[in-house]
Every structure is written in C-alpha cells, then in structure tokens.
Image (cartoon, rainbow, N blue to C red; front, side):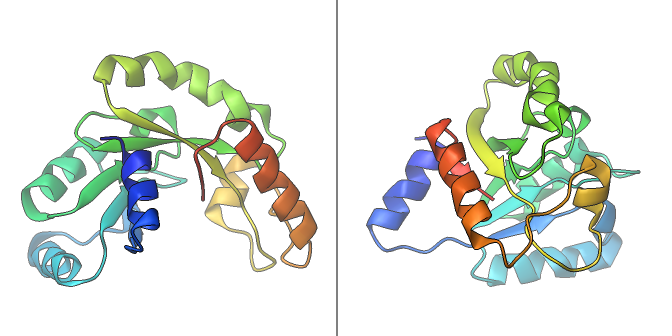
Length: 173
C-alpha cells in the first residue's frame, strides 16, 4: 500500500495520524538520542518526517538508519533539497512550494531529483507545501526566497490549496 492510500484509508476509518517533523540539524545525540527515541515511541506520533530547509552537518542517511533501528512507525522524507533524498525511508514527500513563486521550488528541484527517486523505488507523495504566517522570517521562507501567505488572507490560502489539488498534489503541508 502507498503512504497516501494508507492516509486516506485511516481518514475513512476515523483513525488519526500525527506526524513530527525532525530537522536533522536539531536532533540530539548519544544518550539524549536514546531518551528522545523512547519518548517518540511512547507518544501518539504515527509518522516521522525527516528533512529541513537548511541542512548543515547531519547525514540524512545515517539518521534514517538510526530511526529504522529505534522507531516503530512510518519514516518519510521531507526534503528541503535534492541532496536530502536518500534511500531508507518509507516514502518521500515530493514537495512543491505552491505558496511561493520561485520556479526552482515549483519544478526545478523536482527535475534534479525525480530520476534518482524513481531509481530508488520509493513511494512518492506529490505534496503542496504552503508557507502561511505573519511572524518572524522562517528559515523556509528565507531559504526559498518566498513570502508566506498572510494569515489574514484565508481566501488566497484556500485558492492556492485548491489549485494544488487540481494539479494532482495528493497532500498539502
């Protein structure tokens, strides 16, 4: 079964899923890692997303290997760049930053990583990524050179989400 099929099946059956996004640059190490993993396994979290807007030193492949050894749920890549795509996850969210107007994040990076993902045989989830908010500039907004949709502009967020759905994006984040 695919990640998206499982998600929709859980939704139909009234089962809830909760994902935690783990930024490889902000993860604990050593004994703190063991306590962290014990906490994750004891929590209601059903899915772990792995990735970040700015990856500076942690190896995604090593983190996936360690998650596989210590975590009981689904592990999905949430890549901020093609360099973060690596084997070992259950699926990859093929992210398109639909709230921005940066062509590199609408299709450019997908061209760079698409063939490699296909060769890995990973489950691919076409995902619209929307930045929404009024707070301080986030790493995602800065790195993508994209302004978030203002929180007060719900109609823009809805129209963007609908357009993503019409483009065939199976999930929105």
